[in-house]
Length: 420
Image 1 (cartoon, helix red, strand yellow):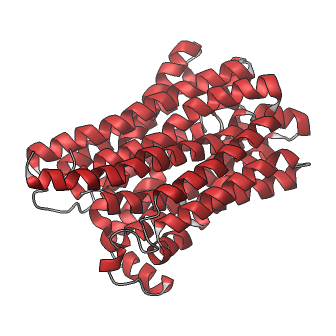
Image 2 (spheres, rainbow, N blue to C red):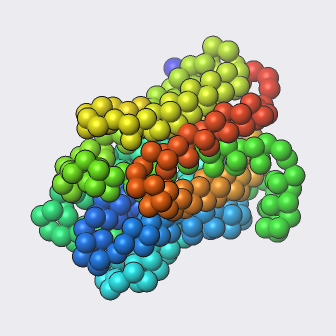
């Protein structure tokens, strides 16, 4: 082993431990906590007597505050560091989860869903900032995909776990258990990242950010910022159905029980987990061979959106539950490819404003997640079926394919070096 390689080993271990033991599990827990209400939505609807419109607001509301708080979260991460913001976020959203079983009706549930969304807002910008700080540029596709896959294995594990726990112990006890685990994970994160100061590991060498307004104005002055955020809005329009309506769709349209629908709901998310992870390794291989970020990003975006939009639009036309699940899995597999592409590109172009750009992009994605379930609910009520509602994501997928050609990827060869 060369002297340089030996010097890298302690640094590699120093960042891999908090990444694998804390950052990836935090994104997994975020997804489980976020998905838990979706899994038990039919039980909650029956217990409280909510109508379809009320359920659409409860399901979508988490995305409203999650979106709104992305922008201040991105700036606060730049100013105070990803370590503090992640710890605060995890503690607050665990509190919101723990309080949810105490809700007494629509308004209290809505308030807690809004609080959960606001508290989770700093998670992904903090994750992106941490990965950008910890890992060299050519390796970030891999580690971004691994961290992102934690969010997408969450609905797999969470759907099954929540379904089983809710069936045997009641839905309220699920939320109590998830809250306790969240507080424990917060302590682990704080202990393992103590070497990362308020500005992040590299922040000491960089100028402190200006005011939130000036930073935002400078970022919004570039075309790529607007293209990426609009593109992400289109992508999440496909994912929104899976984030909100899938369990209810399976129980109402195909007559599945809660426990059975939980297993079926997990299947598409499992394929998304594989595609997100797969993208990171494929992109790294392409960069290694060609040195081109454009080649590593553009084809994945096009293929993924085609798969995601067309497959989802076909679902209402299929009666056999087996083929429905195959089609749903194809849709989320495509979404996973594009998710990996988006967050790698954010780090490619973000520079010192990576956290702020991540927050801005995530804002538009969650705006989509907050609007599409409501639009779908009204279209289903109007038409009495899901065929028209699931054409909306296909429409936005087509727009997204056009937008991705406008993204200005960094030019020049990218060297794969550092971590192996």
